[in-house]
Structures are given as structure tokens and as C-alpha cells.
Image (cartoon, rainbow, N blue to C red; front, side, top):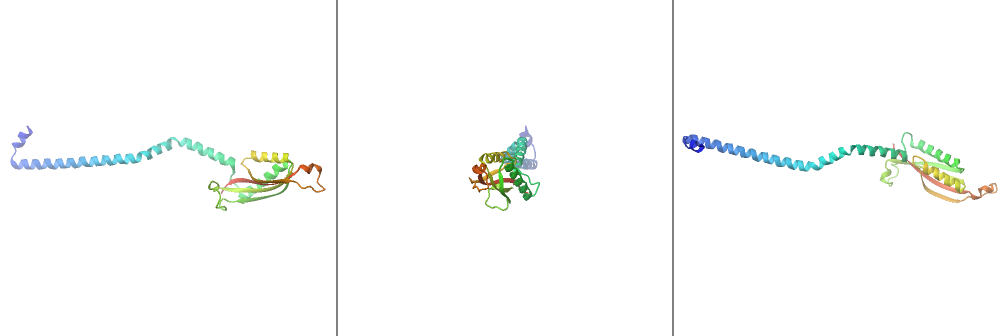
Length: 200
């Protein structure tokens, strides 16, 4: 039917119609090719973004867990180190007084004590995990019976923030004529205790 209608047209009209149909076909083909290329590009982009989207959805799903872990980390830091609400030297002096108090409470004689602060910036060779902490170092010289030393070490282990005895030298105390017989079992102890403080 269309063929009959087309054959019935004058020659010039057939040329115009054929040209228009060809142009329309080219335009339609170009549009189809562009849409196909756009669809393929979108599919590629989606495939590239899928891992990121999945990761972001995973982060979103685990946000509550991450917040809980962050709170637990802060509690751990609080129990393991002094906060930086005060000057490092003042915190070191308080620590020194605490240790002297522990020693005296259990019956040890404090012969001497010295405190030092090692800032996180001072030691380039330290463990990277300690970069955010200052070290408070207290050297103690103590005299007393072994049981008192045991009690002192228990006090250290129970203290919060955490305290660590990093070195200890012991020897039997040399007695002078003035010393009582009770001191015959005394030990002379040199002890180094380290605590951490959050760097300011």
C-alpha cells in the first residue's frame, strides 16, 4: 500500500521523500549509537563506583560500632596514661609524690627519688606508638624488707593510670653499727618507674 502510494508520486517528490527518509534514518541511527555509548559509559562508571558505594554503605552500617570503639579507646587511654590537663613537670612531680607515698605506706624507706620527663619530640628512636605520649620517669632508691617491696610492687600494678617498673636492682643492705638487727633482712633497691602522659 505504501509502495503503491510512493510509486504514484511524481519523480521529484519521490526524491524529496527518499532524501528525507534517509536523513531521518541517519539521525535515528546517530541517536541510537549515542544512547548506546552513553549507556555503556554509565554502566562502566557504575561498575567502577560499586566498590566505593559498597564501602561507604559498610562505613555507614558500622558507624555505631566505630563510635563505640572510639569511646572504648578513650577509656583505655584514660586508664593507661595521665591526661595533659597540667604541665608535664607538674604531673611528674605528682607521680613522684604518689610513689613516695606508696613506699612509705608499706614500710619502705625512701632514700632518694628523682623525676624526669621525656617529651615525645625528644626521642626520635622511640616506638611510633609512643609518638603521642610523654614519658614520666621516676628513679627511686628504697630500703626495706622484701615483703614491703612486694606490697609496693602490688600498689604499682593496681594504680590507674598504669605504672610500669622498667628496671630494678636489688642488693642486701649494708648495715652500719647504728642499724638495728631488724634491718638485717633489708634490701637496697634502685627502681625506675615509667608512666605515660598524653602529649600536649
